Amino acid sequence: MGAGCAEPPGPSPEQQAIFAQEVDQELVVPAVRNAMSYAVGEVTAPAGATVRLVMDNSTTTSPAMVHNVVVVQSEAAVERVGREAAGAPDNIPEDEAILFYTPLARPGQRTAVVFTMPPPGRYPFLCTYPGHFRFMQGTLVSTPAD
View 1: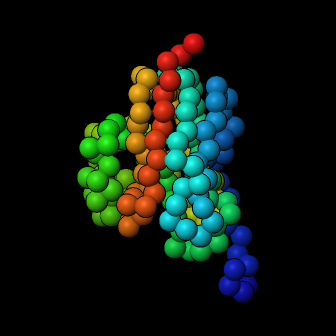
View 2: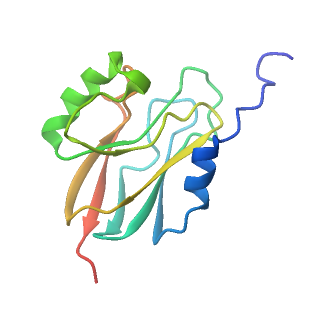
View 3: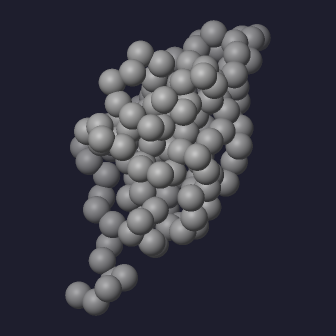
């Protein structure tokens, strides 16, 4: 098979179950094709909602552009979590500031995590693939429930 012809691996059984799960809202964070950049800077859902957070890397073809979305408690944790991720298994350090995270999405893939939105506030998110966090940051906004 020639370079560029390989199909991305299909979702794992765990990811299939996450995508099949019923949720109140789906929040999608797409990657900019073949770049170290999220296509959105902010995603919003009400506090207490069951949310599926999706890392959409489906338009990417460059093998170096592996991404995830890691939500942390505060802006103060972004630098530390980003630095610690480089040597951690699956680029997810053991850090109490991490609230939720998607698995790494390889080029052509989508990964997700389901969670209950935290109390109202602004929660930073970043990509913890080595070297990406400085360029790939955004905010999960939790609004007061209706």
